[in-house]
Amino acid sequence: MEKHFFFWPKFISFAAKTQLLSNMKAFNVLLVLLIVITACKQQEKQAVPSENNDILSEYAAIGKEMDAAGAKNASEMAGIYNRLKEEDTLSTKFSGTVTEVCQAKGCWMKVQLQDGKETLVKFKDYGFFVPLDITGKEVIVNGIAFVEEMSVEEQQHVAEDAGHATEIIASIKDKKKTYGFEADGVLIAH
Image (cartoon, rainbow, N blue to C red):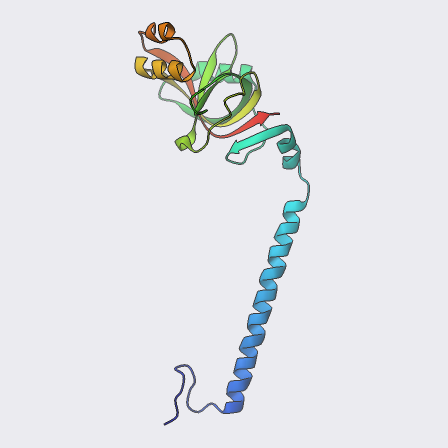
């Protein structure tokens, strides 16, 4: 008894089967060529210089891909924080100077706003950290701004991470209204 593959009807001739296999082979070769050509074109697109490459030459990027366009300055951001209530959040991007960084692992930084005010920037889902030595550098952060009342314990934890003296940490006794920011991307000036 002759064995048949499940997709070969019994009535197809040997010549027809050969022609069908030849057509399938040609189709597969064309499919592979199309994939290779598409992959090469995508590589060429990535190699083309863009405005974003110019930005990345000025900044080190951490977290979500972003650019500097449309970033508010520290003064504008201070005005926005003054208008926010504790339950408000605002998706935004702003630039400022880093005043302090978590010395334990770079899991937060403080960014100068205006008139001695600063915002505590943490990173979304602890997905990335900043270098410990960026105090004094210009940064651009993208994410969500909010106002919160920070507990004594969290203030003490932040002070400890910053490397403050035990006396300073012990002197924190009251809750404090703070400006917070959860960043999903950071650009650090070189």
